Amino acid sequence: MIGKLSGTIEHREVDGSVIVDVNGVGYEVFLPVGAAGRAGSEPGQAVSFHIHTHVREDAMTLFGFASAEDRAAFRALLKVSSIGPKLALAIIGVMNAAELQDAIARQDKTAFKGITGVGKRTVERILVDLEGKLDFAASGRTGVRLRAVPSPADSASDAVVGALVQMGYKRSEAEAAVGGASGGSSDDNVEVLLRAALSALS
Image (tube, rainbow, N blue to C red; front, side, top):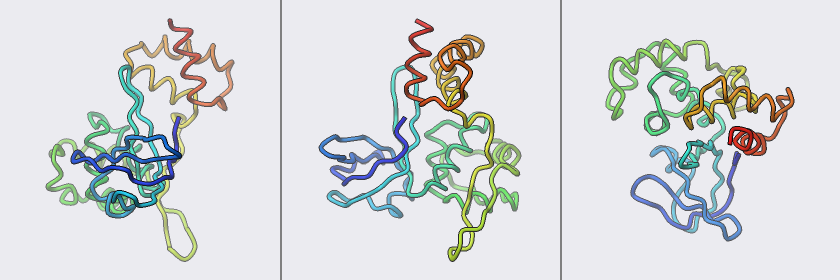
């Protein structure tokens, strides 16, 4: 899967996406509104985005972030029930990773006020589900940086199982296919493992 893109902005769309030209290949990348300002998104500007690749049965969508911390926060939000990429992107567009961590630590419901699609129940789920899942670690002169606490779902095999479930396969089928394709190893390349698992399922 694509983890990072460095190139120049070729075009900026009204829906928040940009076309990033990387050696003549244009990648469509969706950005949080706030990330556009932090990382720069004007045509001709050199940029480098940390990428989350979201796989569905009918599409593979790239989401770009100004920092690895913002991407980690986005991925953490995706693990909250009822929050999909669009809503997680809206949240990261309003508050960066450090601000999200601070809101969760303080259990501050008002920090999410005004974010389209984020209602009272969604805020409560975020505050409960992510409590203790994000923390700060020392980073020299800048003081602190956000890091996601590692979880079993971060392995290549679990990432592919999750992608297959999103495509509509039963978890048991996905786990069996990934287990056979990986041979029990968790160090496989995600893209290679996904292709092998899909081949086995077909």
